[in-house]
Length: 450
Image 1 (cartoon, rainbow, N blue to C red):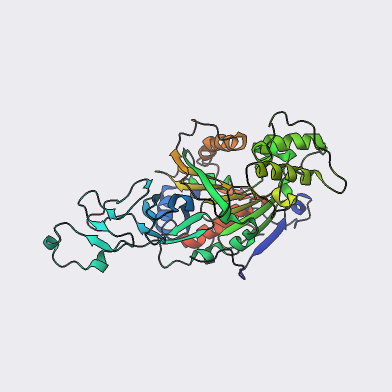
Image 2: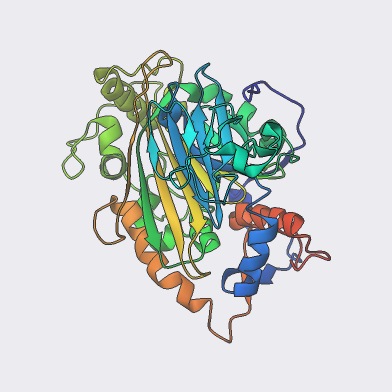
């Protein structure tokens, strides 16, 4: 495994904060950025993604918590591909294509523990956990079998903190190169201490990019999540980019510049409680009066202190973080399909995967909390749920409602190109990476890039 937290010299594009754009100081001659809408609807384009994207990109497969102990294993599927990730007897993390080398039957489905071998349920061919061939029933009937030729095909595997990534392409760049400067940028968060508590998968009536795009920009907050504007400086987020990752850093506890007149401290406190009641131990609907703000302090620091105290009551130590850092959200969008939302005390990761056609996808939600580097890991709850079967919280529920209708509009004959603002630059970064993997040249993206 590589040290993903080690600072490296990685090219980065920093477009700064977005507030200056809202103030009108950007170039007045810049033309809108557009690209074909058929990328979200075309069966042919999805087929090209199957060939050029999913077999060659690094993608989140599982969490360390699912494969923490020798013998732990989990199946991961994306598009038509399947692999099994496991922890061998020596504690090494391994991944293999999920296929019996006899007749092509999948070896594993689901997840489990105490695995000692990989045995096909069809004809009982068997492999050791290091991928070497162990047994072929009635072997003499096959003639001369070269064991090395029938080893399980390897899949690259590496991790970023508690996140386990795989790549089916054994010749692809390493994960540390793929992620660029993102791990070093997030190193202050100490993400090794995060433990996964649940993984929920929901089948959504939208293309995998439609769903991923919804979690890759803040432009939609004013329309879909207006209650967040009181507590979230949406135009003040700072964005930086590497080839496959875009990061925004967003301040909570202060209002959006879009709000006029500015909300009172009590309104800010009420909004804080409604959004982060679980983090701060507050009643979401009746948080009480705003606490006194000490001389030389700010309301943001008071909010951060409330989170610190509530987490300390749970045994979570946030002493390495300032109150201002506690109120920051770092969002990393990793091409092609990952959104990682980092607070010092919690981590949420969203992953999209293609469904059976371009108009559906799987949206997977991973939820983590900070438990300490030496706390024993346990397997998270892992389940599939129907889209309308449970409440995901106010903000996620609004996102799901949007996804129910977002895809149909993309099919309308008068709509041919997606248009992006600079607040949607992380979507653009993903589209540029998509073109590179798919060999789209010259680029189909038009307009003046930031």
